[in-house]
Image (tube, rainbow, N blue to C red; front, side, top):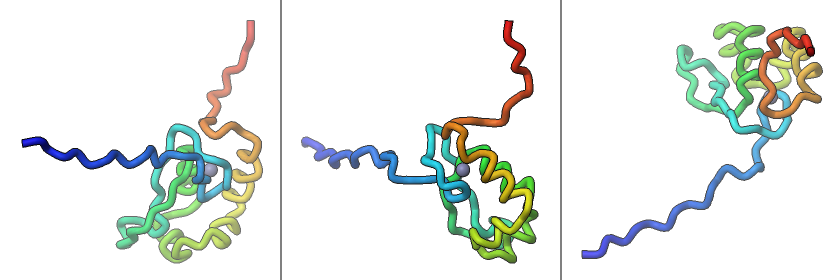
Length: 105
Ligand SMILES: [Zn+2]
């Protein structure tokens, strides 16, 4: 009995996706951000970079996120988020928090 193996879906990881928060193209590490927190019965997720994911939760509480209902515009009104997005804009996709140790030599 020859089992027919299903054709493998092509690698769906083409660079068609951009980070939901900052709009930069995604790198190797992608996290799923719940637009409305799981704790608030949210289900929809969007791909974000780890650093962006962290920034979202650093600047907005679950309660705030639930109230925004996944509105990117409202999230961007958080001063910390807006500043973060401006700051991260020119960083490489896989950039993560710099440990401030850049001594050379
Ligand atoms: Zn991002």
